[in-house]
Amino acid sequence: MGDIPKRSVVVAALVATAIGVAACGSSSSTSSGSSTAVASSSTTASATGGGVAEAKQRLDALYRGVTFRAPPSSGPKPQAGKNVWLIDTSLAAPEGALVAQGVQAAGRLLGWNTTVYDGKFQPSRYLDGVRQAIAAKADGIFMYAIDCASVRAALQEARAARVQVVGAESADCGAGSSALFDGTVEYSQGDFFSWAHAAGAAEADWAIVKTDGKAKVINLFENDLGSTRAIQAGFADTIKTCAGCKIVDSVTFDGTELGPRLQEKTQQAILKNPDANVLMVPYDGAMTSGPAAAVMASGRRARLNVVAGGGLAPNMDLVRKDAGENAGYSTSLAWEGWAGMDALNRLFEGQRPQPSGIGMMVFDIDHNMPASGAWVAPVDFAAAYTKAWKG
Image 1 (tube, rainbow, N blue to C red):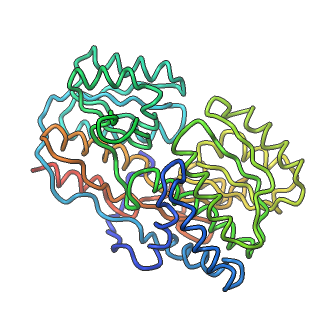
Image 2: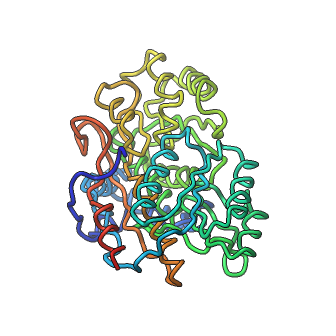
């Protein structure tokens, strides 16, 4: 399990500089609340030299990892034998595979029967997975990176069958009576879309500081997920606070294009924009699915500052070897799996899910870079959940 922590340093609560980072993530996947934050940041930027000083302050806080918190310290004792299904957007994506590993490890500890269903980036399979779980008499379903709208009919059937449903990195169908999730994984910045907005903002802050406020960005935008739309909004909102920065090209893609097609699109954008000095990729699995190879084949590796996110082992190696990636935000996908199972455990006992404590850091060659392997979470979440589940 690549990002299960090896140390148990519990990071302190948010400091004042981190509040600025969280504010960048205050909107949903539609970025409905971002205009106010951008306006206030722009005012500050014009008074202090283009927003670089503010970006550096936020980035320094992210290097320190101040947004991480400990998971819940107590919880209900689990009922053994629960039948729980994970409907995963794709096990071929490293992120999906790590969440599945976390779910399976937590399931063993909880004494539950856990089934992992691979959605393979296909909405028809997401629907089929939910319906298979209902037919298998599942007590709970954990949806990873699958928006409610794509499986609404099946989730209505799950609601009728009294199956508890938890989402992570997933947008519900609405609020109140329109909601079909019984709970969601919550992060230190709030809901996932606030967290994802803050992740995009962190990428922008790194690019602003790295280029001293002169970022000319090729922006890769995955437009088929609420989570990646939120990352995009956070990045775009924050780049706007930098007077000398701009997005020179946006390349849209969806999950089915990961691989040769995304590499081709990235290569074309690099060739078309010779003055670009930043390449933004929304997450690490996308980075290793074409863009890194495109950067290395472009002949412009030395001039491109490449930022992604996740902290996965292959990406950390790219940074160490200067092989197509320079930096990114980092978080623990396995922790998301554990947090989803904790949410289900609480729902089974009639309790509300509690915030997971998941935050983010920023890594580059000079910061938060382990000697080998994946980035390591600064909180021993597995030990914390193990203690909490003893009841």
